[in-house]
Image 1 (cartoon, rainbow, N blue to C red):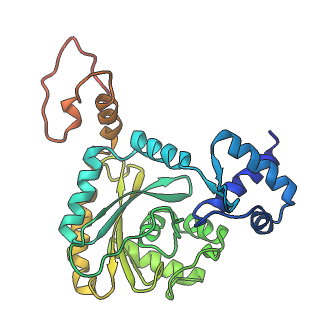
Image 2 (image 1 turned 120 degrees about the vertical axis):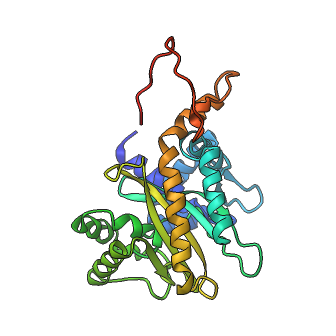
Image 3 (image 1 turned 90 degrees about the vertical axis):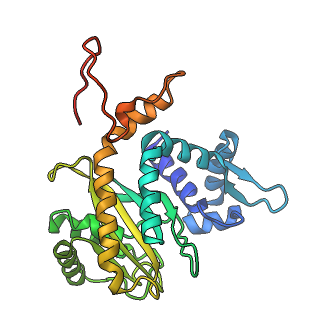
Length: 293
């Protein structure tokens, strides 16, 4: 398939993603600035392959649940093992706020897991499928602050400060403001986004690495978010301490998550106790020594 055809197919899928009730053929054609005949051919192929469905009554097109199944399967085998989710759940219990885990992927971040800690009052539940606006979220700024400044600015500027997204009233819009906030994030040790991604919401975030070495690559981020009326500056130190503790826990098990998933998914094999932090296993001379993470 020609590269242009692949690009058009991806454009169709991205346009349908999150469209409540689906979209008509003509609406898709207008949004994509593509002839209806070309869009119809793409849709026909996607419907035939089971990636898109068409409502018999409205004739609207929508993504099939096959995408959700594929995404959950990919996350299940790659990232969120039980021990990782337990750490995130623990962070939510300690802060009693909405917590998320994001992973670095190329020059971006993706949220892959969440835990709700709020039990009373206002509850903040964000859309996990949203694109991470790097300059307007605590998650994004925490990661950007770990990069060389020129590289961080290039990444955000290349995306036009995410002008295609609907952001909060305090979202940054200039290079100088971003440079200043990244410097503050590095000095503070954690990132803050006050009504930048969404009105009325404040978030704090920190990064974690692939292992406890200070020079290990950054693997992702942990964030805590909630209403500005509840997450006040007086709570920042407490939340930062909880974030730092959870990040330390993640760094101690991050490389083990794949091993844990592999053992728990083995053909009848039990999970290897060595994948559980703090569990000591005697050395078996007959068993090959594995490289340490």
